Amino acid sequence: MPRISSGKRYAQAAFELALKKNELESWQAGLKKMAELSGNEELMALLQSPRIPFDAKEDLLRKQLGETHPLITNLALLLVGKGIFRLAGDIFKQFTDFLDAHRGIERAKVTAAVLLTDKDKETISSRLGKFVDRKVAIDAQVDASLIGGFIARIGDMLIDGSIRQRLESLKKSLIEVRGQ
Image (cartoon, rainbow, N blue to C red; front, side):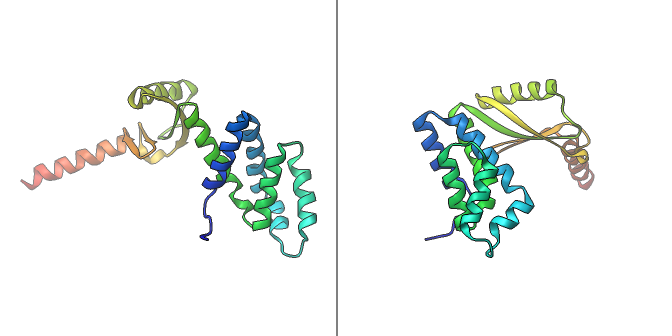
């Protein structure tokens, strides 16, 4: 059996269980907690240590997770047992993607030259939403090398409205005209 390199299958199974039981929000919160724990380097070192017995790891993990859905605790323990608890962040991200798709929300990764205000995000979200005919949630990043404008990625679609791209296009046009 091939080794799973991403959390997509775990996230899909978790999503299907949560959807069936109508517990989407509690599952999302529990998976977020798991993801946060997987970012704790000290905890990860303990959970990955072959010197620490599984019972001790289980007690530690149960204390760290606190009150959460029992199946989320079981998933966390399964991941620790397989030595792949580091996938918790990916599982949370994939679960959130499934949840967004279920709710009719498309995620757009928007990179802008400057930090976007909430109003900017709303405007871009609205325009992109009209473009893809769905509600769009924005994950914003900053890259000053764009000079101005933004680049949006929605799934496989790339919309490059950056000044850098426009300058590159202008440069190519000038070179073509000069070469004639």
